[in-house]
Length: 196
Image 1 (tube, rainbow, N blue to C red):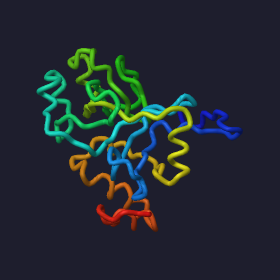
Image 2 (cartoon, rainbow, N blue to C red; image 1 turned 180 degrees about the vertical axis):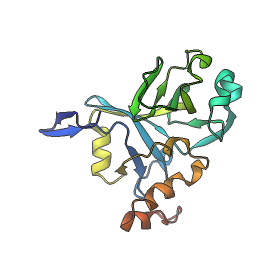
Image 3 (tube, rainbow, N blue to C red; image 1 turned 120 degrees about the vertical axis):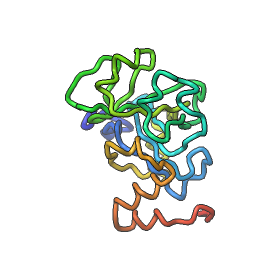
Image 4 (tube, rainbow, N blue to C red; image 1 turned 45 degrees about the vertical axis):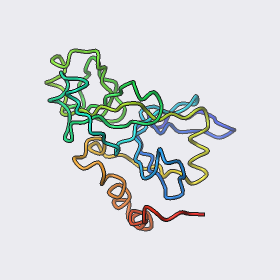
């Protein structure tokens, strides 16, 4: 997925699939305040991702009982974004990333999406953990690139465990701190200070 270049507005666009969008303090949309989004797909026609750090209180068992014991703690639904909140996207981490697994679509390395219509028993031996997202975040052609240019998002490399952290509320500062330098300083930016 990385390295696939397409021309956008006269310049080559590299796919950001599998990378993180980390909201900057300048981002004004309350849907994305202090969010970390994993880009599931990024193509010339637009981009799709899921917010990794917005846990709900709805247990996975209440919605997808058969998948519950594969869900990483906290085993709840996450708000993937404001688009189609009644739909579900399931991220999974394979135990052995080199295997091809039916029903698994790779995003990056051992992380990908799982087809929830597949019997979880058939996947149990291959899946290390899952996380289920209600809804997703979407951008039309060129929209995400414009938001990045305007300073709304940092585009950073994802680690395989980012989508499955035990304390999702800590993900935003954690990802920023590991960048070091000025980026690490942003992790300490007060949540209630408005940037003009």
